[in-house]
Amino acid sequence: MSILSTENLGHSFNDRWLFKNLFFGIQRGERIALVGINGTGKSTLLKILAGKFLPTEGIVVQERDLKVGYLEQDPVFDADSNIEDFIYSIDNEQQQLIRSYEKLLTEEHPDEDLLQDLIEKISNNDAWEYEDQIKTILSRLGIFDLNQKIGSLSGGQKKRLSLAKLLIDDPDIYILDEPTNHLDIETIEWLEKLLTTGQKTVLLVTHDRYFLDNVCNGIKELDKGKLFNYSGNYSYYLEKKAEREGADALALEKNKNLLRKELEWMRRQPQARGTKSKARIDAFYDLEDKTKNTGSKEQVELSMKVSRQGNKILEIDHVSKSFGNKPIIEDFSYVFKKGDRIGLAGRNGTGKSTFLNLITQEIPPDEGTITVGETTVYGYYKQGGLEINPNDRVIDIVKNVAEYIQMAGGETITASQLLTHFLFPPEKQYGLVHKLSGGERKRLQLMRILMKNPNFLILDEPTNDLDIDTLNVLETFLDKFNGVLLLVSHDRYLLDKLTEQLFIMEGNGSIRIYNGNYADYKNEEQERAKEAKIGAKGKVEVKQTPIENKKKISFKEKQELDNLPIEIADLENNIKETEGNIIEHTDPDKIIELALKIEELKSKLDIKTERWLELEELSNS
Image 1 (tube, rainbow, N blue to C red):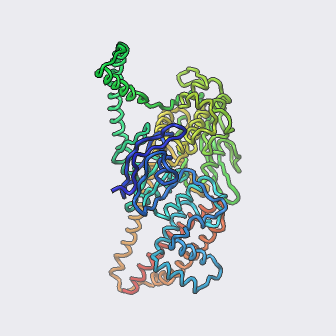
Image 2: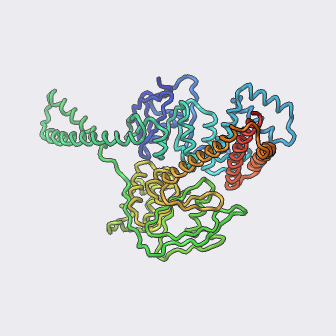
Image 3: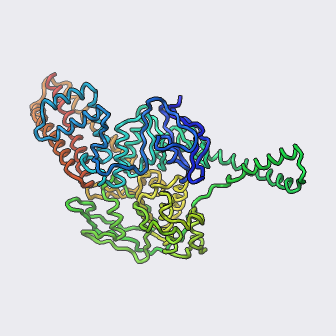
């Protein structure tokens, strides 16, 4: 039985119907992806299902008392409220108890009676595990200073805050619009596990194909106002979609041939119409409607000339860069070669954007030199988007770069023709930039960069706001691109397909060079972790064999056992102190550094605790 469904749902903007007559339902435990090209109405449909506004026609039916959680692409907040007020809901008793408890612990001399009372209430409400979940979610999403004003956060931080609130509330159905935007790869992988744990019900829009494959067990495609359903993951959907489009193409060709014959009959038809003729005329118009707007789908065309590249491309020689006392890059050297295809990986805040700004000479290094070859032409696709006047016309944005553009095949085309290649029809070309959607702006930004015929492409999160079809075209172009490619992306599929080497930003100023793509790196890291675990078990077993034959603990082990409680207490105090330091900082890099330190200390604490239990058991035997 569906917990959320639609009946005869339709919605229009400015007399243009996005979709009509939609009937579908979502059952408990289903994890559905909504796919389709930009402009088909995916985000609009999610907002209607989440109850953000009413449809033009039809209704949304939901199970009684259903709790719906909605993550929008660009969340809107009360700028004057702080993070803590947003995270902890007033009407949620467990959350309010946890909030009071955490707040009391930050006081220098907390009221012991009040503290004891809160501990009892939290225990009675089974909220200790919930408190741990809240801390994990906030930490994973890089949220530490709960007193910070929401108005001071960046767009990416606001999106993560909105996601954190949704995960903490744990609704009956998760409706997520591009949940992976502004997350690093490790956080995306953590989110995948979270959403697939238990019987969570999820409806999401995302361009991340690995995320689709790993999370979703069903696909709904919104295409030309209609909804097509597919069971299975994204790979299965691609296979079945190709079969459907093949069948549609055959049916269309058959209808077109029949239409041509009927058109000849219509032209020869006399004015006097009998009943039989009228029925045939009505059938003709029905057939004509079927063949309208059902042609092949337009695609972005990427085919640009690449400037000639000399032997000397870019040389980085012992470069270092710090901000305050925080090292971003320390003593890094690399000589770029023809055909280099490099992915830049690392957690948010480890310095990826700083690295890009260094090599494009937008900021100077503290030490070392960066030498750019004379023939090197950068194409830098920035995450921030277009830096242009939103009141300019689209065509003027292009003409300001060039009136005529040379393509890969040698032909020269006009600015207007190029815009048409990038799916900007004449009415869009002479419209204002601020009327473009997020995906259209990204497309325009990409086009402006490629117009300069770069031979060194730098792409910083190019997948945000682009639909999957446009991404596939971009991938095909980049796959054939014979210049140097430097790619920053949280899209693991893109990294795997397009890169052959990684620069891994490790967060302490170190950049590790890895030969292979992200999948190779991840597999190697997992194997290394397994070997380390097996090795640790092996060491324990070696120690356990003689212990089992001993009747008494050795003098050396007794000394170790006596010292372990002190070491464990020191580690616990160090963790508390570091957690306290996090609250005092607002610098994201410093916060991440402290968070990593906490993880390291907790790992040491686990090892010490296990050893203490082992020796304690031995001493009592």
